Image (cartoon, rainbow, N blue to C red; front, side):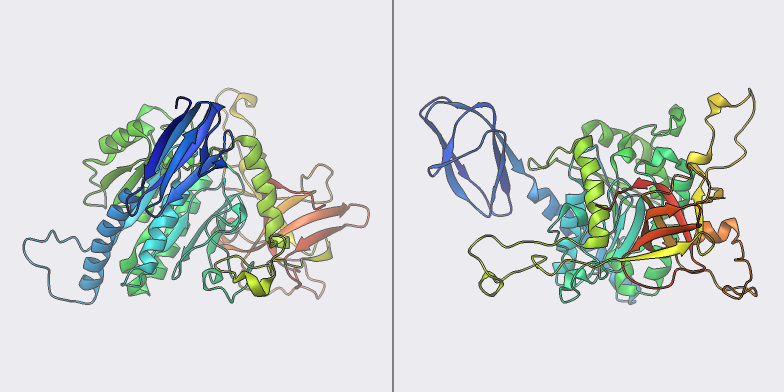
Length: 485
């Protein structure tokens, strides 16, 4: 914009716009100066004018809400048809394209494209609709904690709008980490532990976790007709948008996308802001002939309000998510405001502080494992023609008494209990070793943090979100560490 010029903003209903001054210059809206490099969002039929005295470089992007609304309406139609078919209602008119399959949507795109935002918008529109749908929200982004901590895959049925007051809970707060008085905090996700931020660290384990999660989602929806008709919304990581994330050959492109399509029965792939990826998906799934009769490929534009996240911020976010799991996320009111006068809404509560529990465990009280991954020697370190002895999905026992065990400040995923055997614990009997399948098949009950290790006395100090006996439990470690300060 040249000096002394004005640019007006007049938005339609259901649209938004982002404004940012790039590189140089000054500008103001109604006398309020816009800070250089900051993004300002406007919506709800806003009428405004941007004025510059000395000239500026202004970047303006319209937020693509209309495509989201159109997609929601298409998904709503699929839900109605699926619900009608489940209840045995009469067939729709002949001119209506009848497809009784509920929507199973996989959202993919490059890094910082707004995939998680798209998931939340579609889920929130579904639960707010007259049908009162309860879609299943699946998180396959192991680089984002979603509901709990990074390194996990999760699924949860959503029945009320998701609100996020902190980047530590991008997919809403759970009943174990937020006030249950808030309906949006009543989420009880099913969680599987992967243990790494990137799927390429253990692709076989990643595919197994996706399969196990999909099976549990399918079993849950068989018992819930409304949930089945509501469908599934799947969030993914940027790794899904990579043609060969595991270094595969040309005929093995997009293995994560193919695995998600097969395991979850995906019938809609939404590509966010990437034309080439959209073309590739059309090429791969345009004539798909597996268990799914057809797959619809949809492209939506990247929102102009998406924030670029660098590696340093991601590392801070991981630490913040781990701390939030144990200590909560207290929110503070602005100055000169009290809770009585604030009229707080959504997740804006000041009662989000938790009190974790520290205890001392003997080395023999709990069994700790590491699944494949870091126990594998690289292929370059092996003799020619030799293969690693330990597979990627082989649980390997970790002994805290060995220096360099890697357990100090390590995050441990405590698995749901395995049915007891004949041998008893606590009567002098040795804790029975679980089988590999028993370890691999279990979902997660909670997380622990190893704060200190006393090798001479064979004891370690752990931090847990709540008190309770951990004797006889099984835990799995991964690559995530956090130092409690």
